[in-house]
Image (cartoon, rainbow, N blue to C red):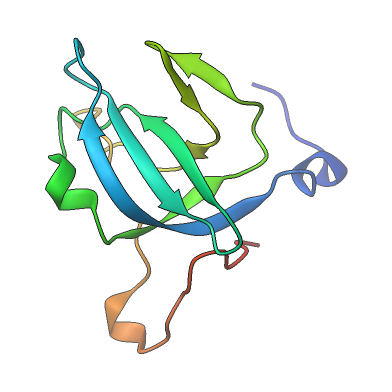
Length: 113
């Protein structure tokens, strides 16, 4: 994988989004369909995290979202962005959430820089 130029990096629109709803995508073990508040709009996303997180575990969480990714249909569901998360030593996704001990609120739509 090559290096990304700073100009290309600045094209990425990463914002914090609050998960309002989550449900399993029928016929899959790994996909969740999420409804996410991005501050000025609500988007539908498909995320490959259902094998680690139950729908009720992600509702209410605020997570980073790549908001300007071209929409893509995954298993018949349009995904209008992508959640960003690392994987643990077993290759399972781990949700990134704001530090609850910071005492600072991170509302939906907050840019990640």
